[in-house]
Image (tube, rainbow over all chains, first blue to last red; front, side):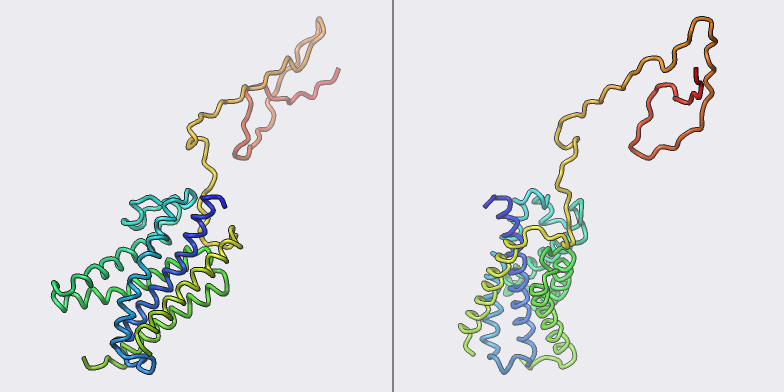
Length: 178
Length: 100
């Protein structure tokens, strides 16, 4: 297989997989504060899943970014992975992905440093994951090459719907006592 | 459900999506419905080779006159509005209706 074709296919596949892994991470995170998934597992198990999924989406997200860097057609530079809205041909669609990556990385790093941070500050930073998910979804919708595929589209919309339902449950029904 | 079972299920779902997406992308390399279509062909400026201008065509006299014959006067004809990309030559316009 042509190397350029290979990195293009890897970029698309890892993009979809990273989206799903991040959705599962967010879903398990919201489920910690609601009773919606009580029938499935305990909070301890959901917390373990939430922490575990970080180690699943990080390599997939990195593979997505690196393969797009190597793909000459995508025309992504290392700066575009950090600074959003810089790409010449689709600044919004690709910039939303960069913004999402930036937010998620800040959330992840602050979670690793949680014991050194003020608890209220950490919680507010962690709530930015809702913003990160919205930007990620818009990035997938506006730039996803395979989003027009019925199967991939239904998976992506289902994951977004699941997060939306859990977020609504969190807002309207409150959270479990700690 | 124990935590290891949740982790395994989530990992399996992710890997299944990864493999399925890879297979789908391999089967559909070019998607004409994709929202992003980055420019593929590089322009002449990007390739570093300056384009060479093509020489202007030259033609001989359009009309010859016999000895003693007065040269016909050339009256300017109607002006044409050319579409972009069509270049006008510096030659005299061919607007004669003279017949010998």
